[in-house]
Amino acid sequence: MKFLFILIIFIIFLIYIVLRDYQIKKKRYKLNNALNSNFFIQTINNLIEENKYNLLEERIRLREIDAYGNEDYKKWMGNPPLDEKAIEKNILSGSKKFKEGIPYFWEKVILKKFGNMELFFEKWRSYCEENPTITDETIGSIRKLETEDWFVFIASQIEKSCLNLIEKNYTNTNNESYKKGIRFEFHCMEILKQHGWEVKETPNTGDQGVDLIASINDLRICIQCKDHKKAIGNKAVQEISAGKLFWKGTHAILVSKSGFTKSAHQLAKSNKVTLINEYELKDLEKFIV
Image (cartoon, rainbow, N blue to C red; front, side, top):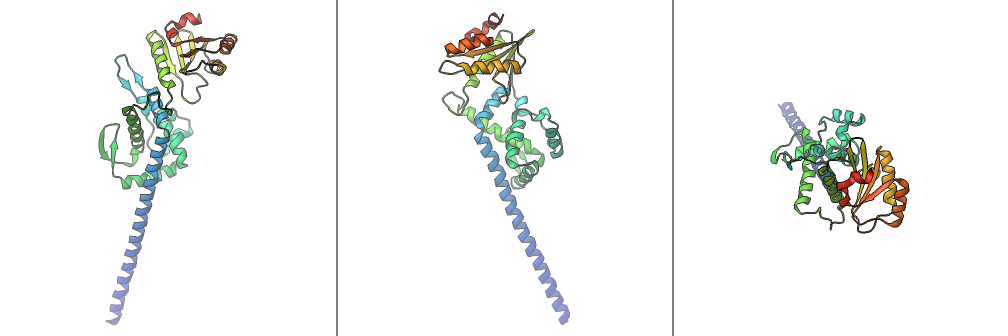
């Protein structure tokens, strides 16, 4: 009986040790999850906050508007793969799925900040466990958060930031952080489209000094748009001249609201760059023929 009693006590002690270790591990796991989750959301929100004006600019640039005023944001939202292996394969192969819009921001800014894909998804899975629901801005509802929702989550956070800026009218030219030139660029693009030109915008990065490319038949016009208070000088002329070669344009046009310096006119003449104002865009063909 004595031996049996000792055995029972020993078994109870073992069970206690096992349960205690389990509770300790559980607490550590929960704490680690909470830390990872907090790190994840703080990092994402900080990156979006730091880049919010550029993100809004890209959102505006990539939208497509039909003849009836309907807006399409497919290019902005993108359609990246959701599986980790597929993502890695697409990135390594230089897939177009990560070349613009939110997917581009995720790869070039967010993923870079986390260091690698493995760490990003490790923190993301912790966030999923700590936050079982998601406010999905893309569909406008709250639903259960799934592991494969990483992109929907990122897109929702970015959209929330962009819509907040739009609602507060942060896109006005008085805000120093916002590139006011984007409005003038769109203004020029609309004038050209209204007068029969097919117009494409160049990417914000690597545009080589060219904002718009307008085409009709064999004409391919490289255009830089300047909304400055002072007259435009030689630098812009040099940029559009080089940009025309890079984009294989037939002509180079510099559009300014504030005119050009005397030296800019001289340099433009020798480099075959046409200098005009926004009102002359409607008669663009007259200036290049």
